[in-house]
Image (cartoon, rainbow, N blue to C red):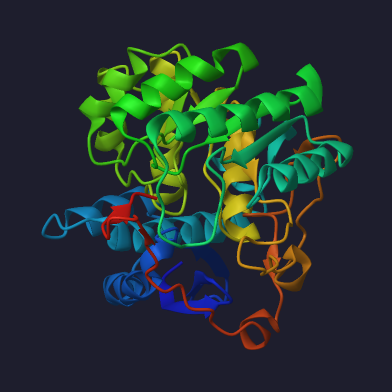
Length: 384
C-alpha cells in the first residue's frame, strides 16, 4: 500500500491531513499544535515529501523516521507527525476492515465516561452552564476555570482577593451540583508555585477530581514541588510533545493524571506509549481534547484499548468566551456517536470509525487563531 499523496487542509479552526494510497484508500488525521497550525501545515508538507512512495503500513517505522530526521522536533513538527500517524492508522484499519482498537489489541470497554466543558466570564454564568451540563447527563465537568475566562483586559488582583474569589467559585459549584458531579478544575497555567499550593489546599474540602495545569509547562521540577505540597491530584501534559517529557515528570512524581494530546504527542503511536508509561507507574491518563471530532474519534479508539483511561475530555457545544459557537460535529463528520448519560460509545466502523463529509473542506473555510496574550496591569503578561 504505497502512499500517493499527503495533503494538509485547514477546516474552520482545525488542521487536517488526508493521506491517500495508490489503491485509493484515504486516511485522515489532525494536528494538535493549535496555536501554530500554519507552521504545522508546512511540516506536514515536508513530511509528505518523505512519505510519498513508501508503504503506508509501516507506521512505527515512519513514526521513528520522521522524528529522527536530524532530530528536530517541537510542537509544530510533532503536531504534523501526530496527524500523519493518526491518518496512517485510519488507512490500516480501513484496509483490514476493522476499528483501530482491534489493531492495538482489542477493546477493554465499549464506551467511555466524559467530562463536558463549562466556559464562563462570571460565577453566575458558570453555575448556570454547569447545571445545564448536569441536566444533559454529564457526571463530570471540566474546563472549570475558577479564575474565569474574563475579557482580555489588563489584569490585577491582590493575592488574598485572587484566592478568595476563586475558592468561592469552587464552593458555589459544589453546593449547586452536589456530590454526584465530579469537578475537573482547569487553571490554564495561570498560577505561580506559591499560588498553586495555597489555592489547592483551600479547595481540598470540595473534593475536586483533579487540579489541571496550575503552572506553565516549562519546569517539571516546579510541578513536582507543587504536587509534593498539595492534597489534590494534578493532571497535566497537554503541552508535552514527547514520551520523554512525560517520563521526566512521572519520575519526579509531579503528576497523578497524564494528559496526552493525541494530535501533539505523536498520534496514536505516541499516546499508546504514554499510556503504558502511566500504567507502569500506577497512574491514569485523561486524553486532552480541545479540537475537532476527528481528534475525539482518534482518542476514542485509544480509550477502547487502554485499561488505565480515567475519563475523556469532551468539548460539549457551548457559547464561546468571545461569543462564538463551536462548529457542530455533524457539519464535518458522519459516524460520530452522541453522549448518553455522561458516556460516549466507541465507534465500531473501520479505521477511526468516522468519515469526513465530502463538502466539509469547501464549506468550512479557515478561521485564523491570532497570537493573543492577556496583559497584566503593570504592562507585562499573565500566563495562560
